[in-house]
Length: 143
Image 1 (tube, rainbow, N blue to C red):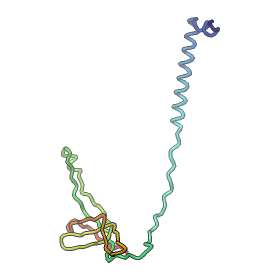
Image 2: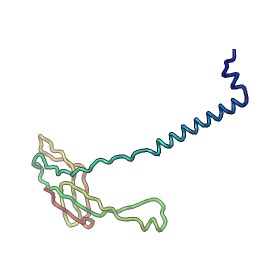
Image 3: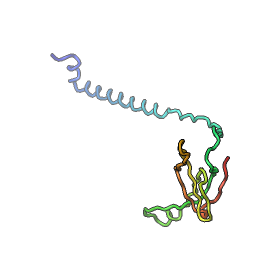
């Protein structure tokens, strides 16, 4: 059995009107979506907080002083580059903070973490760095 709607849809002029209505509806939905996207509100930024200095909770139980070392490091790149890119290369200026293990006229040794054995009182060192003295720009003793 054929419904009334199917009979009407078989008529050519109603079929065209139905297609136009569908096209208008799709066009309307697309425009609504664009309007919603264009009306997007910018993200709010979190307010900046002042950084608090962290005070050590316990006195240092190791016989090393803490330092901040600013130094100049080599940069290398194994990729291909033209003259312009080559001229844009700059040296790196890293900063290390840690305990000074040793210093002589050729190099500085620092470590950023340690573990002290409770029984033997022996210290093991982690995050070790060795820096040539000629590369050091600034060395500041921390409390």
